[in-house]
Image (cartoon, rainbow, N blue to C red; front, side, top):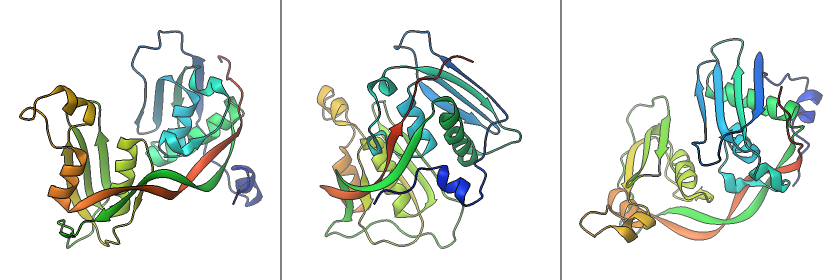
Length: 242
């Protein structure tokens, strides 16, 4: 069911959305072939050659497939953003500030929904799960590295829901945790993407994602429609240079 427009709900609850102390948003004038991405460090955020959809993806911590709608230009126009917080804010707070910046500079209005989308369910195979829950809980830390000959997911002291979310990030499709496994785990998963395996010999290529999940963890991906939280774009306008 459609929720209230984000920001209006915050105002109604009397909550202030975090904002950057200073921010610059400028259209990118360099060729689109240049590198693109969002970089953060305590209290600062830099984005280079990014589309509005890429910014929304980061601001709301969702794979791009879960950012729905919007005019065509949000995938075409590219921007450079430099923003500074008043203090040493971490990634989560910086992304909340980015939400505020997008609402101010792009007049972005969105709402959240749950939709049934094509994706995967992460399930346990008949051989059983091969991971071992940690005896002591720690601070969850995870990362995904794709784009090379080997793709890697590293998950430390995290539940299976986090691991499923990292798989979704790599596959650019929703992945629901259907394992039913409780606890926190240390997991390192490596595989060769299909496009790499198609070009390399069997000896040179790493395992496929399906093989890596099965042999290392006793897990599998089942293609299905899964209930998925999405952000739907209601309105946006191009930002001008400041």
